Image 1 (cartoon, rainbow, N blue to C red):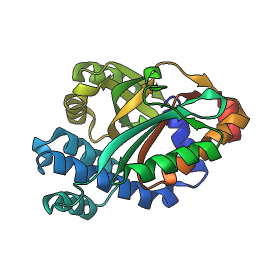
Image 2 (cartoon, one colour):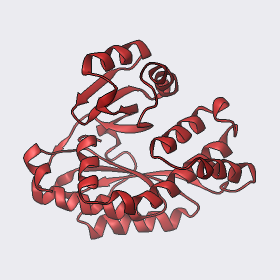
Image 3 (cartoon, rainbow, N blue to C red):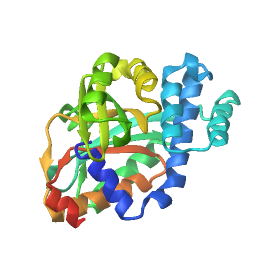
Amino acid sequence: MAGHSKWANIQHRKGRQDKLRAKVFSKLSKEITIAAKMGDPDPEKNPRLRMAVKEAKGQSMPKDNIERAIKKAIGGEGEDYEEIRYEGYGPNGVAVIVEAMTDNRNRTASTVRSTFTKNGGNLGETGSVGFMFERKGEVIYPASVGDADTVMMAAIEAGAEDVESSEDGHVIYCADTDLNDVSTALEAELGESESTKLIWRPVTTTEMDLENMEKLMKLVDALEEDDDVQRVTTNFEASDEVMAQL
């Protein structure tokens, strides 16, 4: 997401992290179960599962929860879920991608559509905003792992494509198909990451003023409240002045 670290900072400032944690764990568990179901239940032999486990650890999810999610897959649970992507527009025409995992396509589509409508947006057809994003691998490290040059060198050696460093930390991007290899190489050099996952990275962004950013936050919050929704991405861009007022 454009403004990824800015968005994380808003959530932190608004004290939403604790409230979200249980829901985040639930969504991570679902991803682990599905990944284990679709491939080998051993993370070392299943790149998608390895990424899911890595992301769960990065979110401080207890080891017991992770193991329980894998056991669910081995026990035959979670087989009815399907992955669906919804695309639409939010306030000021900002692009929104919603990734869902559901056992009831009609229920999820209905909820997502009404959430867009109630919050000043509208659900579009598949592909209506997807062209504004690229599928990329994203690895996030805290600022404490080293300065920008150190991280840049490690990223180049690991085969990454781009690095954005700021006082909030380092965000490393790579081709979606290289995420497993790049994150493994980075881990050997920089240690455990804060987050490792596939994302939709905006190639064009929409500038947002304060009023529209507040509306967008309400829309994203409402979408993330839905248990079927795994992740929400937007292509917002906002000035530091706007972000400071949120």
